[in-house]
Image (cartoon, rainbow, N blue to C red; front, top):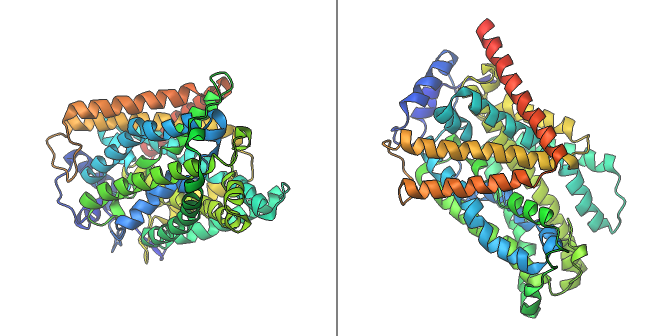
Length: 470
């Protein structure tokens, strides 16, 4: 154990770079849980700036616009365009503003795990962490399938051996794990490079295709009966969520009070552009909406510009998958670290690497789970992923509202303007969207989700019993 060390919560406070005017409750709790961990400790380093954080958020949410193609295929261009322009105000904005405020109120790694703990206690905080862990494994395990889609486009064949893409996915997972161990600072700069490389071919496609686009096609609609509304709304809501995840990294962000609001705003603008422009510039060239499925952007690029750009866009799709995996490893491992700080997981998981001050065991646990899950087919669990995420976000929004009343007197560098009435509107809007995601699932998804929820409750009581006996 010579290469890892433990950090105390008091160390986190002293290195936060922010005025220490936060909840006595969470500070007292975490201090009690971690006071015996004190060693000559390294602590998470505050080394992430605006561009790094914005790129991390961009990859976690928009991902360069990859994965949005089924939105057009499900209902046509007009509903897709209207959805992109309208839904983020009711779905993404509440997440973004909540994350900006609570990350500056609690500038510690762990994010929503700490928020829910302070608002509702250990049981629901454990469930939020459990849902996040399950979500991350399902999301990360989809990498081989996504790689297969884009490699197939690049090779011009529909036959790509699954074992080969699974092996490639595990190798990529190993590289991303190493990057995460070496620090969020490095992960952030790699995310900046990925964002540039992913965005540039999509932007080039948009700039070339938009002048020749036919605005009349933008008004095309498949019809109420012909449209697949379940797929449409599921794709729309799923592609505009995830802003809360970046709150788990607040302990490693410089100047939290200014960096979070600016980075979130920047990533929202980048995401809106990456979603809207490629649709406006390419729908005129192929009006067979049945062809608008996953990995369609490379095919659209081949029609609009030529084969050379289609290869570049396909490579961008691969890097989008890798960048998302890299970012998910960072945020999900910090959520586990937050559970350790709250005493919800064994404290040994909270060891920090002596050189890089990263939660190495949390990173390795998420990486190992992802490697195991990538062997199986998880397409059927995508809806389960959406349901669990909705429950998780609903708890976060509830914590946001409760903390506004119970901790409203505490100073925070960023506060959502307009008073508690605006917070009520944001929370209500977000909860409605959460309900919509849950209702879009089928009965099998509901059954599996219920099993996962019950399993989370059982694990909590096993952990609680273990601590009591210990």
